[in-house]
Length: 129
Length: 362
Image (cartoon, rainbow over the protein chains, first blue to last red):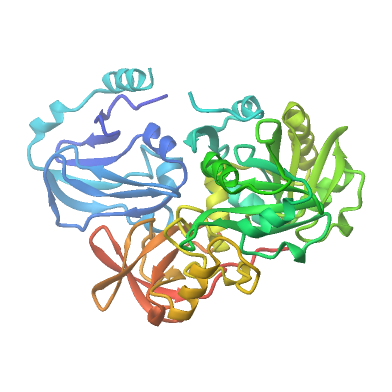
């Protein structure tokens, strides 16, 4: 499964795209595929502060509720409100239009604790073994 | 290892995603629950429900035994007719909900839920009396459901009998692709359709013939995910949720199944007492007016106080709104009553509505 090389990843199947100031966060294609059809998304409020590991929001498939955890500390500067009417974007374009939130990053060092694409692929292979 | 139906390899070939269910490895989806749900509502969907159990009860005292074990009245059906019913315990709780098929006055088939198969078997054994023989046909029989407005049109060329003369809840013996089949006009989706019993050894032949015949009609194989969203739009009960050993059929608003004037059956007196005393809770349909999806177990709230709970819930694919079934006090059960569902600590508004939530195209 193709995981973009320019992103960082977590064991909870979130991805992070960092531009030096703002981190865009979503869930991976693998996670979206495991969930099945996404029918509802609960997003945080702009201005909310989160720590690493806090619940950012919720992605719901037909059958199940999945928490999304923040990979890093930061302040929510933008949420993808298109997901309210089109939650299926998470499945159809996980690394693009399926983005979840944008955070202003508190501590960029936390990004170093995340996995590279190669490490995430290895992690996926081990999980399914 | 989880059990596999005779059609497992076909599901694999179709790219199914499997989940464990009642000790079986079953397809939860193939192309996606929403697409499969839409296929059934608009065209046709094919389900492998072979995990369900099938018993045969026969002999001169078969009818008397079943009348004693069930609250519905078997005298209302004749040969070639089926009836929705249940096994009740002596406190009026539901051991399982079932469909009974009368082949002859002295021979009945019973379809039971996969998760309750062993329990139901022991239940019948414990109460068996008279000249009756009970056999478990589950392993030898596959059950395939074909549901949707196009079901009849696509099935007719495959069978010998005229489906137009097969009434709702009727069943008959026929052949499909050279394989013996019992075709019943029954289903768990609310869309029109059929459920078919075939020998397990021939299940693949029947399944492939149905998929091939359905291709030009836009048929899709459908998994348990769609099975649940479809039945929930119809407010059909699922044992363990809307009915259970602790939830009576009166609370679940299944009065129509209960013939409380029938001579002695297990649970009759308990149900009569419940009816006479009045119920503490009843099942209602909830439709979200705030955004959000009610889920099994979520608390239902009125005036900020918990008053009940959700028994089943989902995002309705047809209505694109959260729907659920919930047990609430009778005083709050009138359609139009505004309640709230506690979704992850926040009260989200929901309206009590009449069910079914949706009237599928026939």
